[in-house]
Image (cartoon, rainbow, N blue to C red; front, side, top):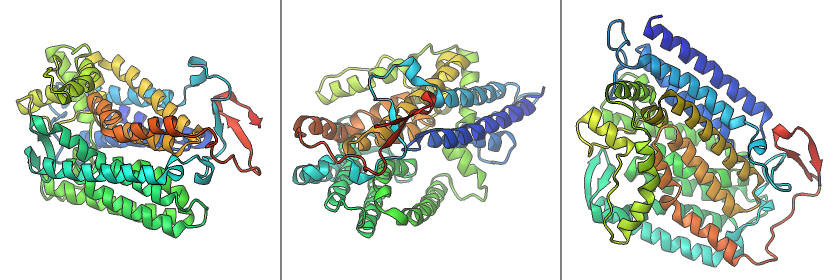
Length: 469
């Protein structure tokens, strides 16, 4: 079959798999964070929709790699391999999201019980409410440090494109981390202020707090990207605050969604130039399909990396800590963006291309890596989502929602190295709060019990029967 026709068939099959996965997850899973839905939707956008835009020529501006080369068209560019990676990846992700994990990793006691619906905020233990002065003071200090770091980074950049800081000189990396902590300081401040009124009624007060917090997050996140980054830092705050504003949450979500789409279009237009091609926004900003084709072609020409970028990711955080301590230690392995930068742009310092998860798995392990990688990614995402639903601690939920946000906005479209940094160094304030709760929480601070009129919980869907406590 012609490579283009094969790709269209496989992309269509991937669409069917994605739609079925959405229906199955929506109707059969208990998911307080809706992380399973977000993962599938992001896969469809990043790999399937952008694949159609590229292969069918909807988009005139198709990123850094062209898959429609050769005779017949697509025969020399890795097009067929990218289509197979997309189809197999969609199946593996769905399987990982719904696999009966307790049979693989048995849980003790009732830890696999998932509430029938997410616990209301007033039924959670709030460390911020119990220690408002302490948590609020720490948040203010972090906000000041983050603002200082942001000013330092803005004044000492090695490269800046369209207002986005790409890299900083060696000694300024610590300031970049301080600037990256600013959104979490804002999140903690909002939770402290919201915890002053824990009754279900003050939706207007919480609405004002949430709106102000989102506006501040938008400003604080624009320096290092401003599009997906804003959604990334806003996701945890929305997860914690939307249940607090009752009926006002739907108007806020609609208005916020429209504003975010408008901001994405405006920012992308400024960076890639004015265009009348609407599909270029999908294929340029979110598209990772063509990068999977590049990875296949690169492997055919130069051989597999055999896990090199994975090793680079695993040791990146320890090396960063050594650098912070003033000890020089170089990473002996190339990162994903160094490989793509050298191959696509002619230099390992050209780190503007982030090929995405499919590409990284294929480059290191071939199609088997794509299947295994997406299966593990789905399992981990499901574990985070279920842990969020079970948690009775607001602090736990902030941390889990942030990890879930990283999975959505970095897991599929990013690289392993950035994911590891995002869930460790970039959210150190949240980890510190998590530790502080376990150290300073008093024995009688157990939170409020579930409402007596709705005491039911259900087993996770794979266990099939209800329990009554």
